Amino acid sequence: MLRLLALSICVFTVSMDRPAVAGQKRATNGPPHDKMLYIEGTSDLFANFKGRATENAIHIQSRMGGSIWKEQSANSVTLYNNENKVYFVQTVKAYLLDLNQDFLPISIDEWETPTQTVFEGRPAKVYKGFAKLGKLGRQHVADVTCIDNTYLSPSAHRIWCRFLGLNRFDIGIPVSLMQKRAPLLSCDTKVMKLGSPRWCRALTTNKIKEVPIDKNGFSVKANWKQAKDKAGLLFSKDGSLRAHEIDDFFRSDQSKF
Image (cartoon, rainbow, N blue to C red; front, side, top):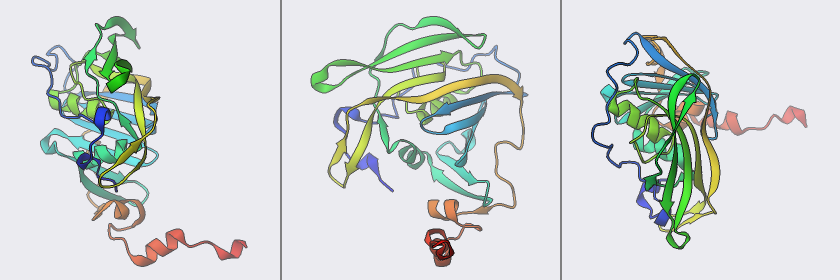
């Protein structure tokens, strides 16, 4: 697994820890605490996915499994594999590295003044993000549509933005994001080779609504096994990956030839 934080990325630095703008808080006139935000959409990161967000928890499901973040353990993400009933606890930093290692998001230096719009009947704003890319100068690198944040705490809002590859949190809740990213061609311990930046669909929301909170929807089942590593999460049946399980996964069915 690549460890990209140790490498210099020049102008394409993944700057994920920029402080939120002072005064950015969850609105007091938001939905009641028995409601959560439900989103269905598509993404180059998650493929088709379903997302649920309460004031202090986020749950994302996709064909690859799911991930759960909770404010009470804000520095970790719980990944799970429905098929094998196995879960793995990973740090937020490691999760973000895995999520973004193929296409590195370009840090946004500034927003243009947003324009007002409506998204699925909700007041929304459209932002254009810009970055200074060396000799290229000021470049347009992101288009973000946001609804007002009446749902998430500052910590939950921040992690939602970070999951999408945004380094700026002085906006509402992103529900649509087109972003310029640099493809990672190769890297070793000292040198990273990046391709030309290209536009990626980080988020397209197809459905958004408020639904009752599922109190059991932000934790794995009590009888599921904890994996020791990502390989155990993906391939084991009880959390411990054995040699014969690796062999079974890669072995060809000779009877077909």
